[in-house]
Length: 116
Image (cartoon, rainbow, N blue to C red; front, side, top):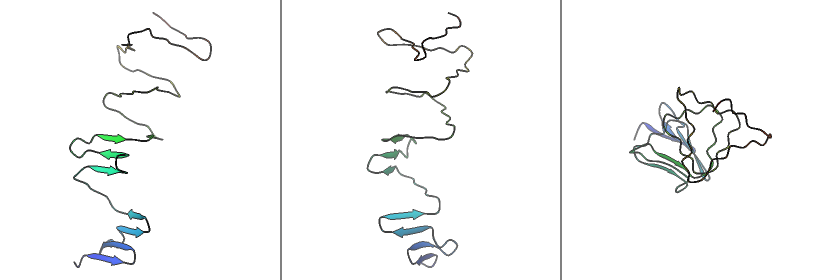
């Protein structure tokens, strides 16, 4: 194949000679990776389903920038917020659907309720 180039540890094309670089135990891809099937990393540590785009992360997902979610956020464990919770809906609601009571507590000693 004329347009594929093998140079040392690099594989590329005549226009981009190092798209893929090989090393012991590592592969570096310098271009865009496109997959039409599912993507799986580490057996099941990170998966993306090709048909739906659904993504599963088995470890901790860290985001250092702003994150926008356009649908429901489901959380099954304890949720910790390090800053204010701002609800911009005109008729916003905080709903408790458990079978026992709801406790709102403060480690600072008091909870302000502006109106009930």
